[in-house]
Length: 95
Image (cartoon, rainbow, N blue to C red):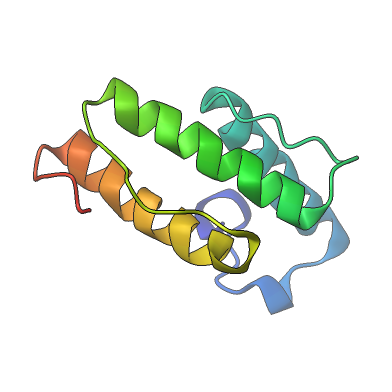
């Protein structure tokens, strides 16, 4: 965010800079093959993100065996994110 706007914290962003950050996040999602459909609810988007993360991990040869339920979507997203970064860096799967 700071790279795009020159502002270090979200609370200091004005509307124009906020839009830059939002558009940047949308572009990141698109590059990763994730469709952040605004018509979906937050839990639906989170579940979609977990499915996308699992597909990417599988393509990298990383197995995911955790059970995902609506109550642990945030934790699953975080765990899978760690696994993705580790797998891409070649330091293990993180699971």
